[in-house]
Length: 327
Ligand code: M7G
Image 1 (cartoon, helix red, strand yellow):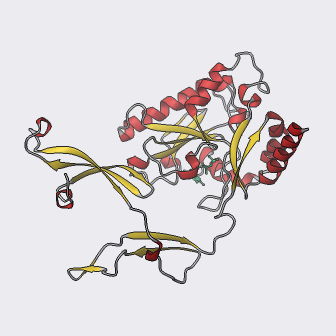
Image 2 (cartoon, helix red, strand yellow; image 1 turned 90 degrees about the horizontal axis):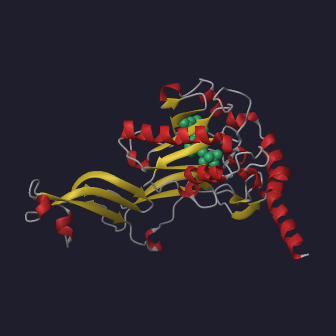
Image 3 (cartoon, helix red, strand yellow; image 1 turned 60 degrees about the vertical axis):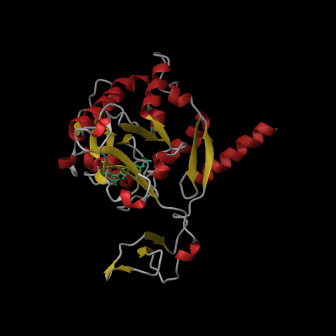
């Protein structure tokens, strides 16, 4: 396939991946003399369609609301054969942008001492209303018909960001219940990765197994097709429905491994692979107490946004740590 005319012969089958500025499509081209195509007359093909770099003259002035999206055309000819052409661009506008939109991130090192002095009191000070949506799911008040799997230790449910249809962007969540090691519900809290210990391995492995079973049975996604990760720190950023994400109720994100559209939520410095966490816990001593667990002893490094409730405290503490190192 060497020219644009032959591209038209591409027969679309499915979307393999949707990433920023690009679409990866699976389909086929007609062909008549390859061994593979003998039966079908077509050869499988992958098309990656990318937007080329844009010059700023395509942008025009306009009066805009707070959140707006506009269609744009790269040439003045908006019509072809008397019919309006599909737009070349979709432009998302946030104006006026506030600090929440323009985030500055700093990397901080959360030592066990800083966790105890700064992070733990912060978590405990968060209002319960922030986790109400999780409480509602766990207590049976909302989204019950969507639950994909449930057991005494956790449940699995589609993330509200997922459309439940596009398998290439599959995104589900496993939310832990308060429970003890026998799986009975008890007041044991897992507020974040810091509270995990070796004794949690059995239900973490069960979670991993059930997640693979669900994606296989329901969406025919084979072994290794999902990326399971945990946020540290959990983001606490306001979400679409204006509530704030869980400070408590530990959850694991489960997304199609080929999906790259999760942006910051998947970056180094926020996302930890469940497999790596399991491996770390396996290396921990079987006799370590909760406060001596590997997760309590580690220094976690992560990015904190300027508007995060921990930003001021952690930044000051980092400066103090650095001063102490120098003296
Ligand atoms: P996060 O916002 O990345 O927080 O993840 P974290 O850093 O603490 O992990 C929480 C996830 O929960 C997000 O991907 C949200 O889209 C999803 N989510 C948020 N709310 C309010 C709901 C909800 O009400 N229902 C469901 N099913 N998912 C939600």
